Image (cartoon, rainbow, N blue to C red; front, side):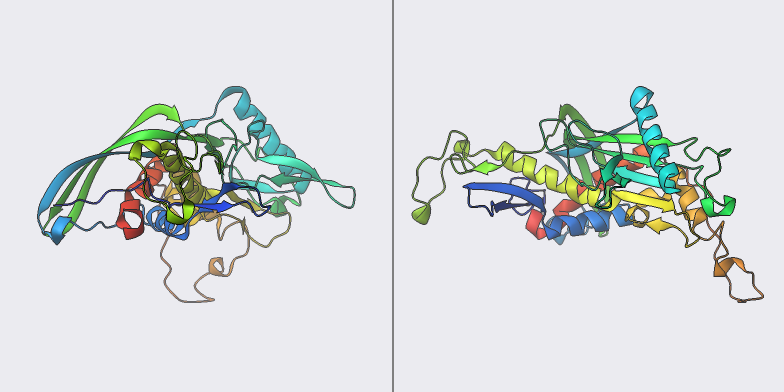
Length: 349
């Protein structure tokens, strides 16, 4: 029987469009809708999406191995960690803001979350980096995530408290996109799916792919001069499948980062948490490092739910205690689940 796998040689992953300025080149503009849909669903469920068994057999198993992208994450330490914390503190005290979560993408020359930008009125303000993919160079594609368990509402203290360390105990993680090998045992018992996945990174990182130029298009050794109006497939060895795969890998990373980038913070004034990220709709929001965010939603302010049963005699489900999962491992597993889930879509098989 035929079995399902991910077709990273497909052009259904990345949106690669022509230059609007008229030059004969095609550029990466983001993941296609199907990739973002799969990433959102898998990251939210915290599991690999359902895959049909070969021949819809209720009892079947097989082993599969394929090449794909994976995240390799590590704690940021030393000088870079100190620079990141100092950068966050500078922004926090400048804006009277206490951050609980940050996620950003570096450039080839700048790895800190905030940049000081000039406004039209002559003032300067700290702005969180908004890119969702980068660095856009030969450097490895990566993502930074930081969680701050000591953040709290500055309004309660009438402003930032000089005796309180808002960034104490921070967790800062950097994740890099890597080439990897997926080895998977698929098993269906009475129609119930069970997967056992092992991911082995190759040690080779993935960088932002270059544009597709009309001198080569997707051919290895230059455009062969075939008649585009009457083109026929060329020998497979003539095509640059590595470039197409890299575009596909980048689109998965981009869709994944779209869910995590942004911030959660307390502003100077008492209107609750300000959220510019979808991270809490993913399983990353259940990690031990982000428990304080779940617990802070209705605390340190007079939320309606905290007034007591005399104001509303309904029964409220209590917040669960701290989860034992950690940020670094959950990031890697979430990306693994997203990659595996791609094969659930007929467009990406």
